[in-house]
Image (cartoon, rainbow, N blue to C red):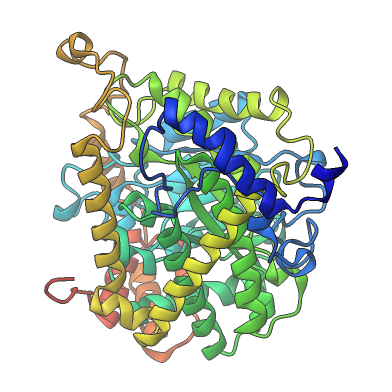
Amino acid sequence: MSDRKERTLPGLLKEWAEGPLRESLAHLPERSPKFETDSGIPVERLYTPLDVGTIDYPEDLGFPGAYPFTRGVQPTLYRSRFWTMRQYAGFGAAAETNRRLRYLLGQGQTGLSVAFDLPTQMGYDSDHAMAQGEVGRAGVSIDTIDDMQDLLAGLPLDRVSTSMTINATAAILLALYVAVARRQSIPLGALSGTVQNDVLKEYIARGTYIFPPQASLRIATDLFAYCRNELPRWNAISISGYHIREAGSTAVQEIAFTFANGIAYLEAARAAALPIEEIAGQVSFFFNAHNNFFEEIAKFRAARRVWARIMTRRFKVNDPRALQMRFHAQTGGSTLTAQQPENNVVRVAVQALAAVLGGTQSLHTNGMDEALGLPTEKAATVALRTQQILAHESGAADTVDPLGGSYYLETLTSAIEERVWAYLERIDDLGGTLRAIETGFQQKEIQEAAFRHQRQVDGGARVIVGVNRFKDEAAEQGGPPIPIQKIDPRLEEEQRARLAAFKGRRDPRAVETALAAVGEAARSGSNLLPLIVRAVEDRATLGEISDALRGVFGLYRPAAGV
């Protein structure tokens, strides 16, 4: 026994490899000659203290609630309060989505999250030719202040936070929210929530942009300034890696490209003479949670460390709150399958647990049926119950960063960080985020990652249960195995009728004056938000305000091949 204690760890490891390991492999070969994460990071057979010997605990890990926040942004994390359970909802008309939101609150949801249809996202009213066939399909349709009032009817806006997933028209949707709160005599200082307001990722991954990037950055910084002055409890931006990941990126690309966008927003805020430490305190993030369990946990931990270092090294920020990377997570929509949709309940549970162990501040869990359509009430309830079981039954929320110190997890966290920094340096070398977007760098990187993934699925190297292995042919031939959410085909006609009636009840001169003021602010550089709030209160529509801005900023057309 004493001889064994005197031997070094490298020697013991070599003895193990040449003895028990070699003997085992001779009789039971491993499943693959190579193991790696979804980002292509090699996964070794075994991890020991030798793999984490270079980690400096105070500098690289620290303690929860302290720099570099690897172990979390709160000292006690979920021991004090569970993450916000924020189920995403939005379909049909405003009143219909309001019923779903109120139902979810009644089932124990602790925050609101609203999805908007494509016309609303693109700045078109429901009566526009571009909206035909899309009204209320991918989210709720919002044209007017009356629509927003119907959406929020009976909801305690001063006691529950609201997240709105909206980007190109974020300023207009926030203005509508503010206008409704004023109608209800709710102090603006009591409003809490987030507006996504991240249009840069639209150029990279999603496509629901309207204006050229510089104009979009200008609108985003106007929103920063407005929130700083009027909505102190509101997050002015939720910089989204979620949609980058949904487009096919790796976990490393998700973090790198999101942070590159974050750098661009803060640089724009600095150019607009906004105080970086204050603005950074209003910034939050929105990330995806996928199936590669340990990589996802490591991703969130690495992201906190990288962001804290970006803020200290690049922006010279010292305020601890401004260094904290606070984030909302949503389980991976692109991982869900139409085949054997009940399997998605398991996928969502694994992904949600990864987000919880990674320290998310709020979480949305997808419905099992979302590969087939918008979630039914039952599917949304099962998704919410998944969160509640994790919170109350799993024990995962009882200690902070429970996997911290794992040789594998810490090695993987450092590997992700190293690769994220490499991407950020490449983007800087290209001239920054906007220039990289214009040349199509991020888009091409994502496309190549998505192609590699699909090639692995098609070739069987990557197993998707129920899709390329363990298929149920009989069930697939029988049609959808579970009920799916259906949108009333009369919705679009009814929404257009409501819009026509709304326009018939307003003062055209007041609308014209308000829209002219918005256009003048766009030309002069004055903050747009107060003018947009006034315009929606004077009963201008979302489409009309968007048209006023289009008239000044123009439309973005990507270069050929991007």
